[in-house]
Amino acid sequence: MAIDDLLDEHEQGERVRTWLRQNGAGIIGGVVLALALIMGWKWWQNDQVGKLAQANSRYDAVSRSLQSKNLDEAAKEVAALEGSKAGIYADLAALELAKAQVEAGKNDDAIKTLRGLKVEGEFKMLIDQRIARLLIETGKPAEAQAMLGNADDSAGLEIRGDALVAQGKREQARELYAQSLAKLDVAAPQRRLLEIKLMDAGGTVADPAAEKN
Image (cartoon, rainbow, N blue to C red; front, top):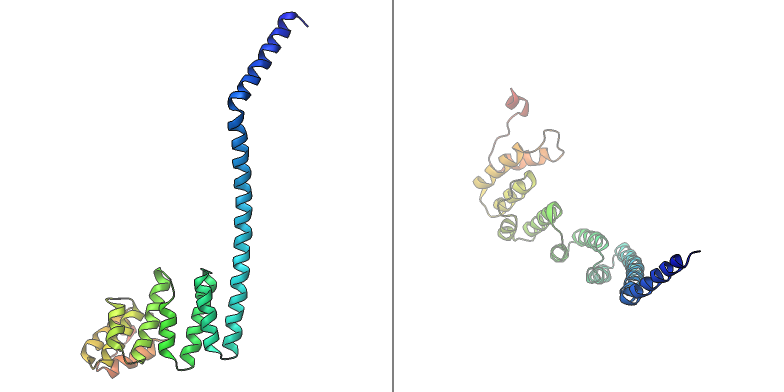
């Protein structure tokens, strides 16, 4: 090997060592950061698995309490689930508790349970409609009406009509029942009940086949 080649290699080696001295701390810092991210990710995964396992255990406890008709204990477990931000487990447990409370004639408790749900979108609309129905059953039709506002879907219109009937406003209810019926599919199982409500409010039911012709 020529002397010039050795000098070139020596010079290159010096350049590498100089570069490492200047950038070594940054390289080590990057490696440390990468390791920290990996360890953090693994910790987060383990933490999530632990939380899900705990949520599942509490959900099972709610189910057992409901099966034994111990609604107070089930309510405590649901509150614990909601406090731990267990997501879908908390929502499902609350819905099951509310159903059991209604079946036990504890409508006020069911309303409280349903109002504790943190839901959005279409799910929130369904929950609000269920609460409104329970409010009507507990003698609070004006509150039910206020909750639904200007809801214009078929179910919302029907419940608003129910609230008006409960307040003795049959003419206004009749109009809402007619609007609800017009938006309901002809084959819908709840159509017959809605027709009865409309007739009870003094309205008439048109023949869907005749309307098409």
